[in-house]
Structure formats: structure tokens, C-alpha cells
Length: 480
Ligand SMILES: C[S@@+](CC[C@H](N)C(=O)[O-])C[C@H]1O[C@@H](n2cnc3c(N)ncnc32)[C@H](O)[C@@H]1O
Ligand SMILES: C[S@@+](CC[C@H](N)C(=O)[O-])C[C@H]1O[C@@H](n2cnc3c(N)ncnc32)[C@H](O)[C@@H]1O
Ligand code: SF4
Image (cartoon, rainbow, N blue to C red; front, side):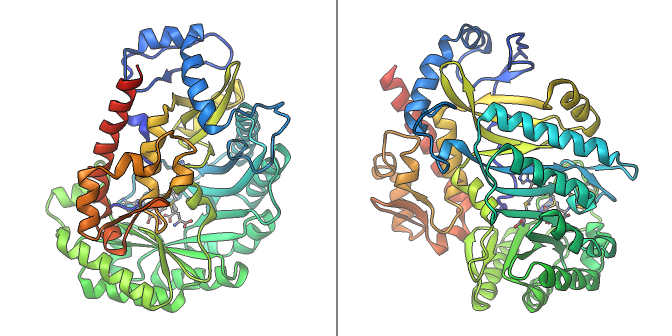
């Protein structure tokens, strides 16, 4: 059960063999192209513009071709709306298990970071033509180490570049140290209205093993403070499947979480990341990981305990009650557009070209120093840009959407595809098997996992992604 915290980055499997640098405006560095064909001939066709014509017209007909001066532009048009993700890359200490994009720097140039975040928001909202920002998410790294003035500058910049509704969710992830707990009220003044507390565990033994800087008591204090400042809008992250963790120890963490939680809890199964201190410890035999059945039992126990406490599992890793679902994360899972700013931020949004618009998957330069230099020089620190074929988008929609309670609606699917969800999956033997096993439900309206299906969604997705990929390739070959 891998949590959905890793955006499925199609970028990683782009098979570009060369790094093309463009001199024409807008293409400054490497731009990847989808897997098919050699880069060079597609690269040249991109330069000559022929490639876009065929590709963009197909996309435009699917996603809507409103351009900036489109008369019937409406504020809520899908292609003109995006969420904003802001990556704060600094942490005060390296946890033993984490390989997210973070750097330990106790001498951060806050003003320079602030100016660069502001500039990159301005550049990317311009290049995307986004007219409405649906939500803002400060992630990291440890965004609670950013100064409130920086947070405020980011929110103001977003509001100056696009319409930011007054009730837009502005989330920030906070580590529950004493220092950061004291800043929660200032974060609210800066414009934050939802806080995700990186609790992980309440047990001293596991917080020490994870290399966390806070205690279980600190976490409780932080959550209580957050609930008083952001009532109904406080989330907490818990991690399970830890080395040497027993089911009863996990149950104790769950029960402590429910005693103190507000209305949202995220559960992440520990992913053992190569290159982390914990990975080395496990390889050296200092600790033993729990086996898969125990981890599966931990997850199913958590679903039961949280549902008994009134939480609804609305995504594999995310539980909410009283409608406290995360707006920002749901946008990811629907395959909506999002602009990512800051070192290592990922983005998916439509880019204007002379022929109309195409959708790109982007990653910003990982390292803070080079990222700031690039932003100061070019306006943004985009390091990777891949034009997303319709098939790439459909695979992402399947990958992320099927992890949600509602699954994928046919209406949403047909925003991107001529074929209905039924056309694609009704005659698919694997889907039929999963339906017969009570793991999936498929009808005219949607394809979704049952509660039982969500418990084993990784295995279901592996099979479905494979068959979708082949089905789309067959369709493509029929059309060419
Ligand atoms: C990347 S951290 C950023 C927020 C904040 N710095 C914190 O530590 O809570 C966000 C979440 O990612 C999760 N995470 C990080 N590394 C992970 C791993 N190897 N396996 C599972 N979850 C992980 C943690 O549970 C954490 O709450
Ligand atoms: C693991 S999720 C935790 C969300 C949290 N449980 C909540 O409900 O608000 C957040 C982490 O995922 C990563 N992340 C999310 N969106 C991202 C994006 N667009 N680009 C890069 N990293 C992203 C960041 O490391 C961020 O700290
Ligand atoms: S888990 Fe959070 S605090 Fe720990 S290293 Fe990763 S980003 Fe930093």
C-alpha cells in the first residue's frame, strides 16, 4: 500500500536520449517529448511547429481551446484554473527516512527566496494563462520554517496574478516542534487557513527511530494549538509499517491520534528510500521491517478504527469527517492543473503556443541556489518540461483517480478522451475479473474501487495501467 504522496511523475520514464536546447523564445532548456520516436526527429518537428499542430489540435479539441483572448472565457473553465503548490526546500534536520527534496541550511536567505517565489509565480501564471487559483499548498521540506512575511508575500502575489477566491484553501505543513507551534497564529495572519501537522507517531521509540525533532507531547501541543487557530481545518500525518512496529503499537498511535485529531488524518505507509539513513540501517540488519501481511493488517485496522470514529476514507491515504477533505490534494487526484513553484516543485498545466495550448508536466530545478539564480535570470527555474500526450494524462487520471472513494467519472474521463470509460474498460478481462472479485465497480457513470478494492489498489492499478496503456496504443495505431 504505497501512499499517494508521490505524484506519479511521467517525466521519469520519458526516454529522451538527448537534451535539446532551444533558442526560440520560451524554450530555454531541455524539453522532453513522450516515449515514442526518437527525440531528434520529434524535436525538429517541435521546432518547426508541425508537431504541435497535430498534437495541440487533438489536445485543444479535448481540453478546450480557450486562448487568452477567448471571448467565452469563463472563470471556472478547467483549462484556466489551477491550484498553486509552493515548495519550501529547507529543514532544520534530516529525518532518517525521508527523501523528499529538502536541504539543511540554518542560514537561509529568506528575502531572496521570497523574491524568487514571487517572481516564479508571476512567470508561471503568465505562461500558463491561468486566471483562477483554486487553492495554495505550502509543502516541503518544512514550510513552517519559512517566515510569515514570506507566506504572506506568496499569497498576495497569487492574488495579484489570478483570481484567488476569498475562501480558497491555503494549506501549510508544519513540523510540531515548539518553535513552529509558536508561529501558528502568525501563519494565520499571513493567510494560511489549513494546517497539516507532521506528527508521524506519538511514541518516543518511533520518533527517535525516524529522527524527528519533536516528542509525542510536542505533537499533541501543536495539534491543540492548530485546532484553536484553524478549527475544523487541522490535519495530522501518521506513518505506519515502521521497523519493529507491532500491530498493538500502531493501534496505540491510532487511538492517540483520534483522541487529539480535528477532522482530517493522513496515513502514510513507510516507503524505504534508497540513500536514507534508515535504508542503510535496514540493510545492515540494525532493524527489521514488518512483513507485508502485518502492514496490510495495520492498514485495514486503521480503516476500521478511523471509520468507527466517523472518518470517511476519501482517498487511500486520506480520511476526513465533517467534510474536511483537502481541496488541494483532491485537485491532484482529479488530474486538474497545478502550478508548482520553488525548488523541485512539480507542475501540470496548459501552456499557450501560437497554435493553441498543450499541457506540460514540469519539474523546477531541485537545488535552491541554482533555482534562485535561474529565477533571477530567466523568471522561472524550470528544469524539465514534457509535453503531455493525451494518453499520459489518461494514465495519470487512472493512477490517481482510482485511489479515491469516488473513482473516475465518465464525464471527467471524456474531458480528455473520445472513448468513454465503458468503451475502454467494459470488455477488459482484467477489469471483469476485478469486478467479479468485488474489487471494482464499473457502470455508465464511473469506474471506482470498492472498499475492499481500495485495500489492494496498488495491485489492481498495476494491472489496469498496463491494459490501458496497450488499449490506447492499439487505438493510436488504428488512427495512424
Ligand atoms: C515530506 S514531509 C513535509 C512536511 C514536514 N516536513 C513533515 O515532516 O511533516 C510530508 C509527509 O511526507 C511523509 N513522508 C516523508 N518521507 C516518507 C517516507 N519515506 N515514507 C512515507 N511517508 C513519508 C511524512 O509522513 C510527512 O508527514
Ligand atoms: C505527502 S503530502 C502531505 C499532505 C498532507 N497530509 C495534507 O493533507 O495536507 C505533501 C508533500 O508532498 C510533496 N508534494 C505535494 N505536491 C507537490 C508538488 N506539486 N511538487 C512537489 N512536491 C509535492 C511535498 O513534499 C509535500 O510536503
Ligand atoms: S520528513 Fe519533513 S522534516 Fe523530515 S526531512 Fe523530510 S521534509 Fe524534512
